[in-house]
Image (cartoon, rainbow, N blue to C red):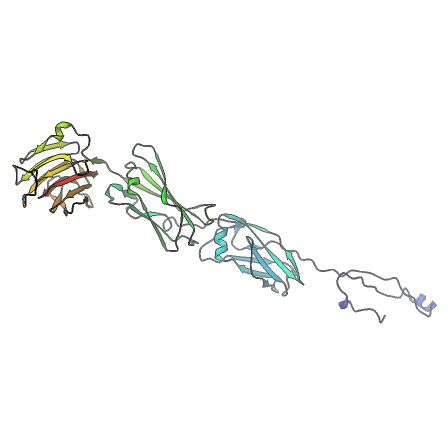
Length: 422
């Protein structure tokens, strides 16, 4: 019996012989002793059952990430030892190993970058357990990672010139500005896709992609801004809806996550006067004397005051760009007559909330007075002579309506591109 090893010294997988007396009577009959048959058994390694990990707060194995909220993965299995090295694997990335806990559970925090890379995908989550130099693999969790929730107010794209859901296109003097605030899990380089839909003035559908924000890489700023072309907005039908759709891609354009939809009611040009297509008799008219008038579809042009009746007149003629315009000709024979004032009254066929026009003069300051139906002055616009086209626009707010414009000049002036909005 002295040559039998203690059980603790037996290596796993080796047979262990055991000697016992067959019975006391046999031993008595044989003074030299009787050796029994060996009893052999195998010492094996305890197998671990490794269930899939559990991601907290994921009903139906679906994760909707929230910016600033930690995502924890719990790893639990029976017979966890403190010598076990446990490695989380999230969507192919192996995390730094942690030691097992006596309680049988360890938790690992998923990094923000890995959450972003997983948005819109189904990812595989499992773990490795290494003990005694051997690595074992757990069952796999199939986790669906959905898009973060965007706030319908904070994260919707905004056209800055719109007021109370209405976009007054006719009031715009330049391209509109569109912004979007920082969204959840925003990172520099994520791709933005901006598009529009609505109704054209002819009543047909309007669909357009933004010229710049289509696969546009985002910055790291808290606010992204671009422009919406005025020439595109002018195509839209009055009293129609403009839908602004913005999407972001977290994965280089493979998939797109929509922002909340923004919709604006279009207040559009109701009438334009460019003095095109007028009858020949209208184009031949020249008014010199007080009370003389020219009638065009949108207005009646009347001479109110003319300090140089012999020479100065108003008429519809071609401007330097060879387009038709309302000409106030202060010097038909060349040269400018100083301090010779002319006043025209343009009485509109309807009342309008806004009026816009272009003004071209070379030598002197002019004035446009916006009048109500009773002839009261609502506002005055000043045009500076600089040989460049200027845009004058009323900026009234509230219930006041414009019924007439009074033009006061002492120079050769071209007036064109009248745009009226009710």
